[in-house]
Image (cartoon, rainbow, N blue to C red; front, side):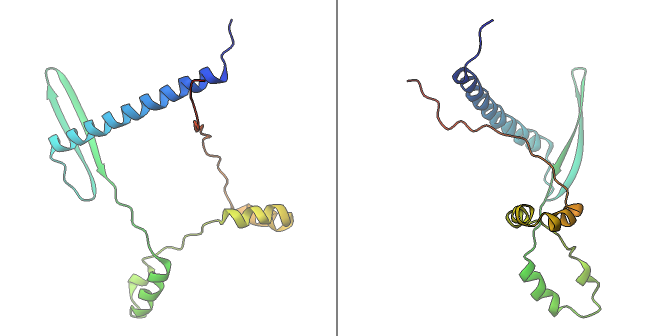
Length: 138
């Protein structure tokens, strides 16, 4: 049994990443053609489509998501101008976001404080990735 070298693995990884990019580009083109063929034109929302041809049946769903972000400073200024009893003052939900740099400092410099704070922090590891920085034949 022969051992695989790092160069061989990285070469195979590089090929797989290129294949993946080509497949993604092809998928995007096909999705655009499907959207055009179905006539889906919603600015936001979803719709289902069905078709049957030559003994084959298909049902698909197309979604058009929309993401909205809010400027905290802008909202605070606008909120002040709304009438006091306006139900729209409750339109924004507070969002708590951990400052990773300060959290690391806290973990390293004040473990007792971090022990209390971490009780309300959920930690989830992401997927490790490999970036090919160089692959050349010498």
